[in-house]
Image (cartoon, rainbow, N blue to C red; front, side, top):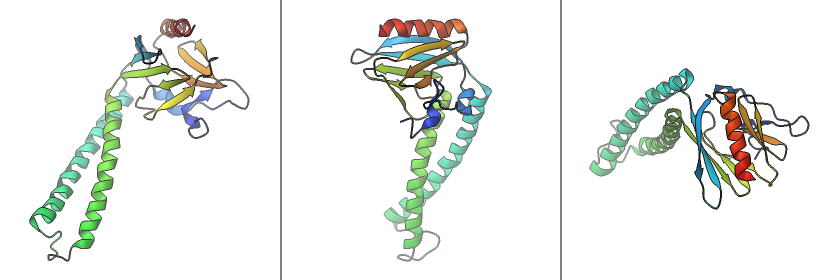
Length: 202
């Protein structure tokens, strides 16, 4: 996983496994609160809540504005195709039976437009959601999705994973790779979560 998506991780130790911290991670808001929930299969989940930020709301506003245009496009093209297929109304003034290229193009365009809109809607949900859920399962840790990291990140746990708390940051280190959970609003919150994770894994 770290070969395919190295930007998801940052360096734990200097050397062959050292990875450069992605600047996008600096946009993440600090964690203001956290709690532990029971998980499946003997594991547990850590649910964290992040603070609000101007960058998050700015991106959310732009994304919502873009989705307004997306909705207009969906309605117009869907209506044109529905009228053509169900009522026989030609598209673009073409005579019946002469509009096949336009129909084919609009059908392909609508398919791609709809799929793209689905991913943008999912991004908007992540922008509006402040809660982040991390799953600690047997043999791996599944990081919670957020507006910066919208895809799933997985850290393998070989049973020797180390929980490090440095300042306002908590890092999970396994096989020379670190996955950051913070930053946290204060050092006390970071230390408290690190201690709880060590206790639960003992």
